[in-house]
Length: 146
Image (cartoon, rainbow, N blue to C red; front, side):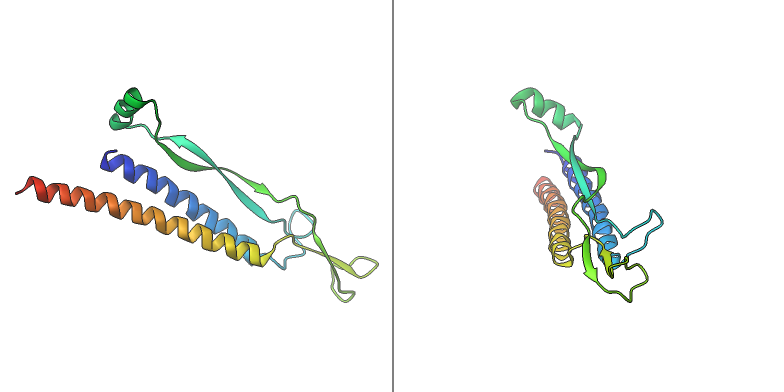
């Protein structure tokens, strides 16, 4: 794999994980939001990724030789989580129903924190892959200059 293809693949991962981090942050920020412009409580969002081919001159030669493809990643869509809202008994809440129950967002903060750690580690792994590619190119240049 050439240097630019490696950078292109890892940068697609960086962009996808950055987008995922933004969605997770939105979920955490709205974990107690009971009233949205659409009506009702905030509904948790999740990111769906899609593999996309990375095209480069090296990729064309590789796919001709071994019938494999190089793929990056992109955000295909953001979906709403369909899990039901939590009902919490709080008769003094302005959004309580006639029985005193409030529909709370379907955001589980523990799950979101695990997703946050996972996305952060994936982001860091892509940075490490870019650094490794950069170091290989630098070592190749050192060898070439001897």
